[in-house]
Image (cartoon, rainbow, N blue to C red):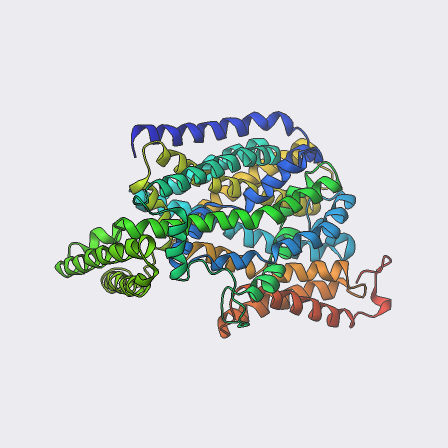
Length: 557
């Protein structure tokens, strides 16, 4: 990177930290620090909801996945609008009227403190590990692409975000999210224009899409019903629905967003904003990944996108022959692509044959690296950063790296603040100091934020072999969200549900998902359905064992 790029990245980091610390004046009470005094406008909350979910994994992992796999990942989000509508009708008004700080606080009122503590504990475990993964994603990629020290990169991203979250609370998180979303959209828009500008003369945007479509990169619907297929319309509509209900309705990092809204209606509007903007936004990011693929039809791509592994492989003379075959295969594919896109559809078969030979030559390089260096090698997460570094003009590189930092920091900040809120409210206030002052709760919240920030950085150091990052993060969440959703279904819908049933139902639900993951080939989106159904059924059946005489005065048991 040039001096201007470094200046943009450094200036951005300094501004974000300063702006977050500036928000400390709004966090003098526990309501202000944890919930922004329930005073934020719907559009700010809506952007924060989207920013919390849009991590650097989305920019880095989703674009890389679209490069290799096309648009079919968009099916993952088909259940989102339906989930948001359900939550707007049920969870949002309920939590607002209950005046709770955390989603799990209500479970004590409905069941008992054990159920509340267990659900909050599982949230802390899942989010604590999850935020470490979120930090590791950009850190691993940036450290390899730019030659930075991995640990230094992890702490640069993790602690800079922790600092403004510690001081500013949810107010700082939300307003920083709003600004970061504009940076992300602007950066990706500039990236799109640069890609289109780089197409050869005579090749238009629609010509590029025609090339991608010929190779199946634009497929967005798979109607097959197969539990072992990751992305189909059914896994998205059913499994994705359960995942989104669990994530946006039961995960404190999202519940806390709409609890900061001024009213029930503004909380609902913020979720509906995400419901109808998230899919177009994800489509846009996937499209950029596809256009990067099109860009490399006409421009020589790296033989693999992990430069460090290429440097190792080039020391072996056998790899040089592989590189020569790869270069020739690209030249042949480029010629076939230009003829197919600008001259005649009759060249389609020639193009498909040339693309197959190109892919075979790349597979040969990947196989060589796996054989000689890293058996688990997968460079899908390095596609977009490498493309940016090698092909974007000066200044734009810094802008896009800042956008990756923005995506990472927005998610990290929201997760850390949610972890601190649950730690302070569900554990410290409930179990140790129910009558402490607001100043004490804020102090504990800030200490908790810092501790979770350090914990996440440590997790990130060891989370280096995770495979496709965008899939790993969602798979990780799927181990917990369905079961947590099942507890809230018991609380809201099943009148006969009792505390004992909810407590053990949750444990059965979590266990069922782990069993399914280890002993079946069912894909991860369906884990959310399994966890929810097992939790609800087991919880209901166990509740039937609680006799009426064993119930407490308020009907819990």
